[in-house]
Length: 162
Image (cartoon, rainbow, N blue to C red; front, side, top):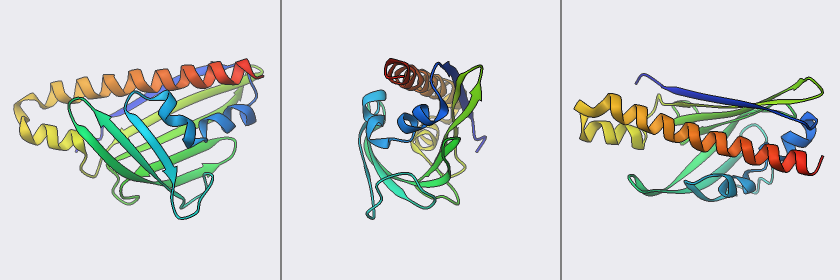
């Protein structure tokens, strides 16, 4: 219910259009995540666009395996790519890449917010409500590490081909 958030950022020595091409390519996401195993566009979509949907197949030691459907809710190339997980009106999580010109390169921000809809985190808290603070803290740090690794990979790819 508190809708905890995580935000990480980095500066990349490449223009926003180059960084956008990598950040908005969902097919690269499984290579950058320890949790996301596979992803594919749905309904004939092939790239981010408002209303486009994609399926993400995930696995986590504590939560098991699951599949979600994400809905693109923000798409302004080369500046913003955002998606809502499960239900765009009441998502289990919202994610966003934001890009802006800075110092001859691109500042890339990766942001996410849990809720307000139910998620695996909600289920874990229901099972052990007395550990809510610890559960949320551990999960958010875990997501922060994964998001930082994602930015590191995008940076490496963008600067390597710039």
